[in-house]
Image 1 (cartoon, rainbow, N blue to C red):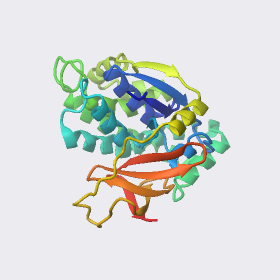
Image 2: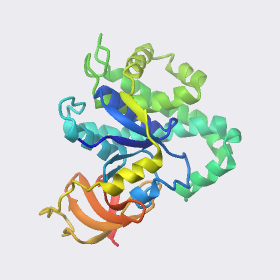
Image 3: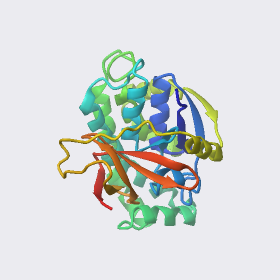
Image 4: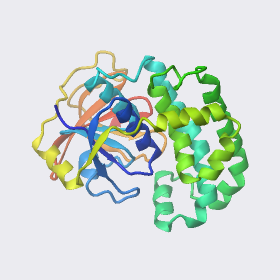
Length: 306
């Protein structure tokens, strides 16, 4: 079986979500540390321009976005499932990754703004071209976002199964990983502020400790050049399949462009291999890795003719 190669960096909350899933599933994986801003010279040959974190690699198959990474982990490792409520589990990811995350970020940057390197600010402005990195505005809006953050945590508190370690009982599920992400982000960045906001919710604090104790599975460091070499000698396992229900009549071989619909809208261009309601896979070539197939979710991504 191909190794799990995970491209991430330690402070990334989206990476932490997947690290927790790897822990829940008890998996061994290879850890490739990538920069937290561009340039990412050893990631771009794999993704074709997708710059967001994290990215997961199995040989010459590259998975972009936590949504499709979780689906693929469930498909490849079905003996330790974490998704038990199908589509609703993935719908919860949109709450975690968008409104809850968007309430967490201004609290952090509103506090840390003056200490953040200028290069990081410029990088994030390129990811959010319509939203300049304005520390003063974020700081002024912090009270509103603390209100929102409290409301999101209250949703978690209201969902905890009484007397159980995790949201759905005494075994963790993907819901725990989704809910854990933003609390982890705030606690690891601004512990005092997070603890103050969580004081109202002692059951959430206990639950958070249970999720944190799961760990991240068994990881071994891998150099980014080694990951490129793995892709170059591997062959994708993706097979060409016609999607009979594609609303736009796309078919294998079409040249398409895929990009996120929220931020980091760097288009990846390639040849359609297969698509369905959940996933689209495109083949592309780079001299550093040869032919690779890059996989994206359908929800949250736009597909256009190249």
